[in-house]
Image 1 (cartoon, helix red, strand yellow):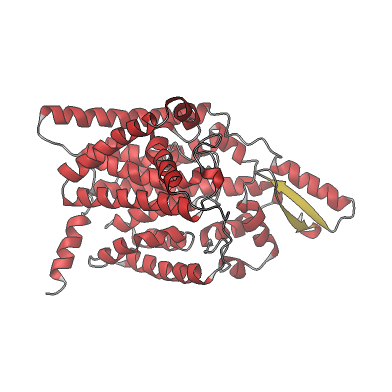
Image 2 (tube, one colour):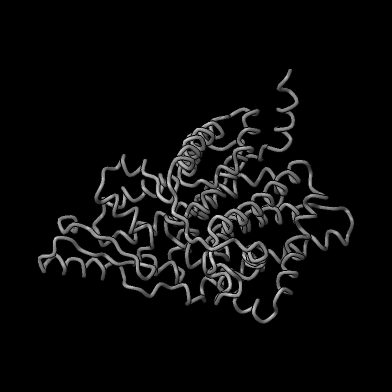
Length: 433
């Protein structure tokens, strides 16, 4: 009797989606997502350019240290089980294939997050078109295309969003989704924000996903509390700059993209911020006003996640480089926009899915849906036309050849350079193959 009320509450905010058996559609969506991520100009470059920690941390550790030790080794103050697991698999490939291995794995996992989003959102969004747009934005999100495209180092921003939807998905396939959730939870400390959702979810049947999530969160939380983390800088946090940076990096970037914001903000100043708040804020208010209990709860939680994520990301990693008057405005640390923007789009989609009775209200909702669709198309075009995100440093196969030349000159170790500029790792010559 004591659990009847909590279960009724959980049942009202975790509705069950209708049956969806369009297997062909999921397969086609998966293949299209992976192909898009790998074949757009920036994605093509990732096939032959190794990015940051993918090389200097995950790849080198997989090549030099035992697998179990690597999986349990924290970096940056938390566990990275999924990136390290991918690195162990990539290490089985010939060394020149390392960059492509990481790029393909990251694209596949991001496509999986998109599929989870589409499937789980069926319980909350009546419009299939809106569900498609929301899932597609995981693939073509106009934020972080230089830093977060096709690498495992920054995949955790997408994994967080995938775990969010997996916890909301009452009828999810038990084993594969549970495996995805526990690996993702052991790869990002930000998932700890989702603990309250998992506790509410425990009042409903099919508890495998919240149980494994909470177990993974407990392990990740213990590591976060015990592991050392080197701060990016010791610059004092500027509250006004953090607030302005947060507004630019979420509602504005959601509409313009990280790369193109540098064209709008210097020319129009805070008018850009006010316009973005209006365009994104009205649908969120519509969700809170017109949505049913599940829709209002989803919009409120997604908005809170967006605000908390961008706030924590900026405060914990604040440096003068993140100030909005810097060249490029938000290009430094653009990865911080990814998850907050996706959560904001979630709240917006709920508002646009509401169906008020008045004609003028329906017109407003339709207009908002068209804006979201246009945003999706413009983001796709931006990916296809954006040359600035194409990596131009030393290609990975050239770096491997340079390393082999060093070994041929009797050096005991080879220095393997990769992206971004200044990143490298050292590998014994007997591991070059």
